[in-house]
Every structure is written in C-alpha cells, then in structure tokens.
View (cartoon, rainbow, N blue to C red):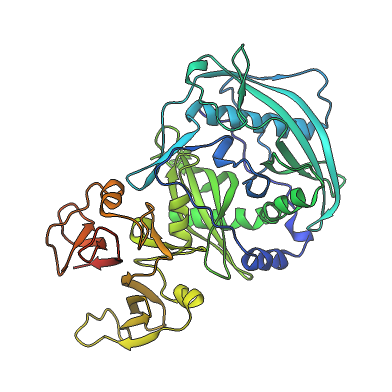
Length: 482
C-alpha cells in the first residue's frame, strides 16, 4: 500500500535563527544510550519506534503531506474538532501514517541472528478516525521560535482484532477501534512564529508529564533542534542522492526525522526516513527499487558545528533500523563485529581507533609496520595498548586510523547480542551465536568459540575465549583479510 505523496516543500525557516548555534548544541549535548533487549520481544506502541516515557520520546519532522492519490480510507473527523486547517491537515497526515504503519507491521520486533526483525504478522485495518484535538500549550519562545502544542486523540479500526497485540497503554473497544499508544499522549508541535499560520514541525508521544512542565519542555527541546535544521537536512540529502545517480534528475519527495543515533563526541547523527523520485527515460520512478514489502529507505545524517553530510543509506522496516544506523554513525561495517562500551559508544572492526582515546585516555603505541602490507606511501600499522585492551590498526598517511584487530578483557564491553565479558557463559554464547564453532581455525589457540564466515575463510571474526572455564574471559575481533 502506497502512502500519499507530495512534491517536497517545507516552511521550516532555519535561516532566521542561529543555525550554527543549533549545530553546535546538537554536537555538544550529552546523548542517552538506548540498550535494546537482545532476546526478548520489543513492543512498539507507536509508529516508528516511539517509546512510552516522557524522557525518551522520538519524534518526526517533515512537511505536511497533501494527498494526491487515493490509496486507502478517507478516514473520519469527529464533530467538535475545531482547529486551524493547517493543524487538521497535519493531524490527518499523522493518523494516515499510523494507519500505513500498523497495516504493514505487527508492532513487535525482536533480535534474530543479531538483526532486528518484525515478530508476528500485522493485523488488517480498514479505517481511521480523529476523535479529538485541542491546543494544550503555547510557548512564546523555545529555541528561538513560538510553538503551539496540540494534543491529538485518534484510533484505527481493525477487521482482525484477534491479531492485534496490545501492549503498554494500547486499547481496543468492542467494535475493533484500536488506540495504538497511550491515551492522551500524542502531541503535534507547530511553529507559529510567522503570520503565515501554524507550520508543522514534528510529533511526539509523551505519557507521564504535561505540556509546559519542565520535563515536557526538556523532552521536546532536542527534537525541536533537529526539526529546525530541516532545510539543512534537505539540501544535504538531495546532494547525496544526486551523487548516487550522476547525470540523472532526482526529486526529494519526503524526508522525515525519526530519531537520534549515538555518535562520537563532537558529532550528532540523525536517522531520516526518505522517499525520492528518479527520472528514468523521462518518467519519474519511485525509489529505491529494492524495497521489500513493509520496508522504508533511511539516511543517516552527521552534523558537526560546521558541516553536515550523509553517512549512508539502507532499507529496513520501521523500528528495526537502529543498529544499522549506529554502524554508520560509528564508521563500522557491522555492529556484530564491534563492542558496545558501558556508558555508550561502539568500537570495532573498521572503526576509528581515535574514538577509544576519548574514553580510555592515551595508549602506549608501538609501530608494527615491519613486514606488514603497505597500500600507499607513508602509511603504517600500529599496536595501541591499554591495561585491559589491545588493538592493531592501519594508519593512513594523513593519520586516519582503522581498527584491524581488537582484544579486551574489560567487563565494561559487551557484544551486539548481549554477551558480557566476565559473566556470560559458553551456553550464552552458543544461544546468541548458534553457528559459533570450536574447531581450529587460522592462528587461534586455547579454549575458544569463533563466530564468522561459515566456510572459515577470509572475513570478520568474533572470538570468545574461556581460558579453560565456562565463563567468557576475553573477546577478540579480527579481520582476516586476503
């Protein structure tokens, strides 16, 4: 089912505020680290991974779509809903997006072989409605703009109530009308700084504090900063997409901020859902062509105080993309071959060794270039050593580092699938990595299990050492390359 499409436009006027100040605020502010349960099912109680606490509500920022094609039910707006036309249009667009999401997704995801995937099958839906909408609060000045906060009441109608998985504050009445989030917790935020009227910025789900409270205000502050960078995001995304299709016309039709990903110090990374058109022989074609059913295309944008760029793009189902986004933000090929440090940060194969200096301090550095392969004049290989962590890395002539092997006994690190040094057992490893092998391979010695290419050939490896016990004592990451 295709969502309504509009040619891309926006009324987010970032030029009238201090853009560089916002970029600096984004890259300098502390970031929360979300730890995903690795075995249990995660229940998504609102579209695109919206969480249920006031201090962890992801949001979206996008222009309001104006439907140009009939692709589903027209929906209902109850009598008594009396808001400006632009506000109602944004609300209808939001509920339509919820209808689209829940028609394609079960609302539950889980870790399967190290990847987040949808669990179960979606219910069938045939209608949506807006039951209430009211102005809940007005901010005279927040981040340089005046804001109106509207509270939205909405439901979706299912024809298969037995397939609806109710979680958190979700409700379903006897007629099959589903409230797919907490009651009275959906808010739409509008910029009302200019005479043109309300301009939609983003939505959020907040269920444990009221608009205007200190907690509510601080919760929406950071997504507001991202929303006010929309113009910058659009131009950066369009430049990237044009680079992917040289010589062809590209038109951005949608760019929607989803959430922030963890990132190295001095950088802020945002995940955006995008839709775009490509001119193919004089016809506009919806891209990308390789989207599977229920998938969306995502871009990861990196911001510093001076610049922004796209780190990469990928396809995924809503709510399953976070690890792929983090791999891009930390310069990794795959978080399965990286370690997550307690307190935040991914460190692993292909990533920068310099990120570890920021959290562990200066290491002892040894040049190990003698006899090693050289790719260009002036490059070298180095071993970096801390008390409980050693890595070997390639260093370019410009000084950029790329981790080739990493070994640690530090209990402050864990793997993508939740294996902890010093506490996880051999059984835990085999449960998380069913294909892990204890067969001799490469130069491995001792009591170990390795996870890597099925044929045991070249590629990335994750090795667990038990040191003749049953508990993981050390973890090694190695790129055995040709």
